[in-house]
Image (tube, rainbow, N blue to C red; front, side, top):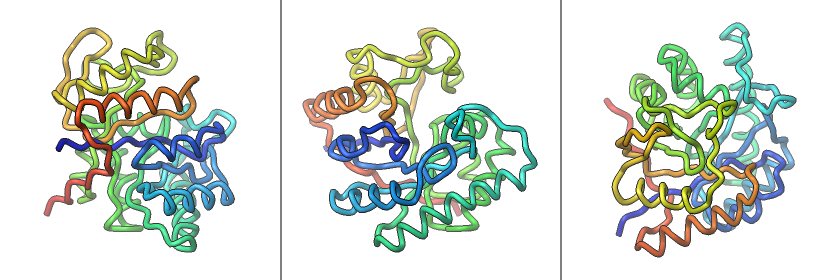
Length: 253
């Protein structure tokens, strides 16, 4: 049976965490940068443990006022320090709760920048890998994140987005452009089925992109997020596709 992972970004104060944890197979937990705090992280990790959901860290620019969605110019060492601090926090709590942190997924502007800039992504991923050599990265497929993960030897989980439009070169359409977020539930469901069954995503200009992604991101901060996530899961399972935390590709030697 074909399997696909459903992941969601949690701990961001949207009030949807509990419901989404009944639907998804992987949880990317905000760890104090763009959102999140110790009590929230602890509660979500306990729920992950109880429900058998794979847990990952979701660091971003430490810019909660703008939700980590704007690029912040700073020395690289300062940015790497922010990422380390967030990972130390979530790892400490995960050890306390007894839940393994399986992967890291970058948030917002930090994710977009690493998807576009290979050297920048290598620097970020090398820092993460130095903290935990077994940590996988949940990376936007066909982006520089994938190449950077391979370059530094990180296990890789390829990701696609259910409700975000793509450019013809496989990157996400910036949120300030019309059509960047897909609100039509039927369109979201159709693209998830096409990705799972055919390995294809249609870009905003109609270009058909090939994708090896086996994890689909369902955002928790869009209106009707829980109902949409449930509909996506029901549609996939209705086509005989099981929902499971697919294992990462091993790091290349």
